[in-house]
Length: 286
Image (cartoon, rainbow, N blue to C red; front, side, top):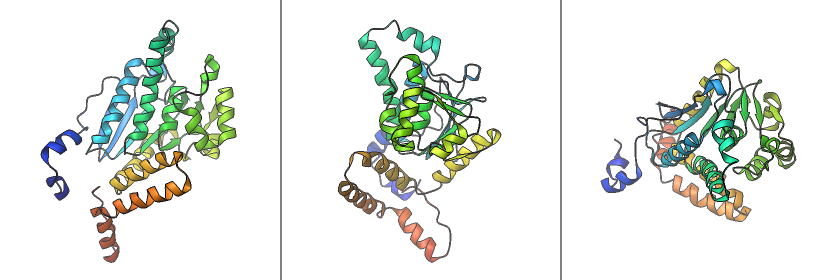
């Protein structure tokens, strides 16, 4: 336990700090090593579709991550050769056509709350995308902070193909900021697949790797982030998200306040002392 933890009132810590390495997931796989949590959607025989249950559990788990002291970065991957085929046709799509407006709104708000939780948790999220990445699967990849793909990946915001609008789970707000308005419009109006190499050119993927190295590369990137100044990384994620709705003047002032806060951390002092000693700093997230 570090000094900063010892100074925290136990009652305050009890309500705002928790360990998640021991969390037992019900509807996907969950593993934590060296500060990196890996979520694996684990229905490979169906290309890892989401269900009402997995949506809700993912929403709740990402919501808990803001309190986690042992998770500093997250990888989201799919079992087998695919990332996620979206909402399960039989377990979600079929039941939805029988529901009335209040229940439908309950569902769409739940799916949107998953994206909100992913954006609100301070940990950077790395999506490891192989094979099919469609519908809600494409949204989960989009809502991540970084995306590593493969040449054979196929990402499709296919809501249009099933008679729905492209404005699902924040797609019309977030996708244009990643690939640009014109390219996002094409994907959302047509529902066509975005191939891996095209996705890298468009900036949807940060880079492509071989399928057999995908999860390891995503975990290595996440581990690099987890070994960095994690409090400051959380501030960076917060500002990247919040500054979408700010003017330049507001953003500059918000960043001034945020950076001043980071300058109070021991990690900032450690970095300076390591630089003077010509050593690599060891960050502790405080």
